Image (tube, rainbow, N blue to C red):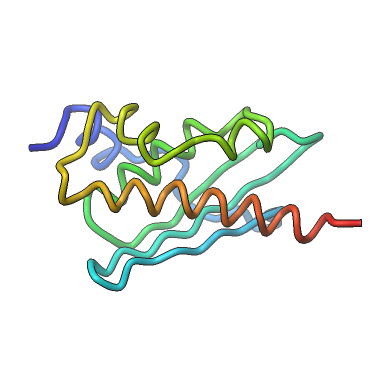
Length: 123
């Protein structure tokens, strides 16, 4: 059902928590399944220096949140913006079809945090 990588990121999620002085915060949810995700980013010279998450949801939602923080950390804003839901699922070595919406949430939450950062830093 779930790959070993999904189970690893579910049972030992990376980058859990909040960034107190986050430069961008993205919150998304899926009412149909009850998953809620918040991604926090800290940006330094256009690079995502730190990425953390808080997720309430199923194992796949937690695993995709954990994975996207790993994928985005150290990338430029432009590189992080290009991470797609399929990229997240592929990095996790696949998700069951009924759980693909969870990877959508992770990518959406990251993009929402980036949008928040850009909005806050517009001149």
